[in-house]
Length: 281
Image 1: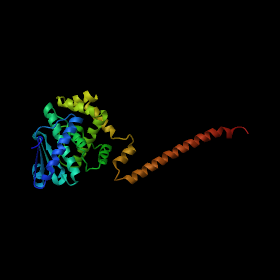
Image 2: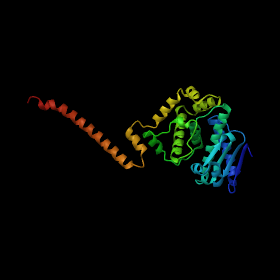
Image 3: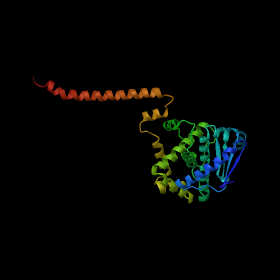
Image 4: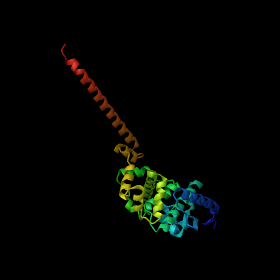
């Protein structure tokens, strides 16, 4: 163990141990500076292969995830076959994501409170800078079709089965956390987390820092997903499946509007000319 970080690894993964130390130390400083979060003392990061990962989660759940954190045990476990499939850059992102979870877990332990799961996962996505398998157009699709997962279902729990639902839950969480940060900046987000760390509920902290109820925040976030135009929302929601038809429909709509404007202008010109034509000769 070095600097409070213990790394265990299966055969062939020992070369990543030093990188783990460097990434965790750098992220700890970043989280302390940006969000006022602290990592727990005595973190354990386990770098494992397929068999060990399957043994921890079970084959079905293991198929959906690349890593997982157990804040209560101050530990994170990473499936090295998946985490390194995109190279060292992907490994760093996966590790960062799980370490953010440990920092949120430490905040909960200090405050004796519970951070909503969507915020926990959303911050891990943001500050882990995670890549995402699912096309983000799926979020627009779900929003347009009324298929978003209610935040009430993502407050105390998070989907563990079904790739589509799991990915949508992550997309919603990242989007909502980003929206929360962008509303008033990182300083306000830090104040929110400090309030949670002092034992306040999320609803109390949200009202104090942002002046919003949870329902009001939910409504504003959902509204932010819309462009304000049902036609544009439809195009955003179905870019791959019907993009040609969508753009053709938009072209027809624009052409129709232009034609109506031209006809209206021509009608006005005729109205101005008509009294002169019909006057006495």
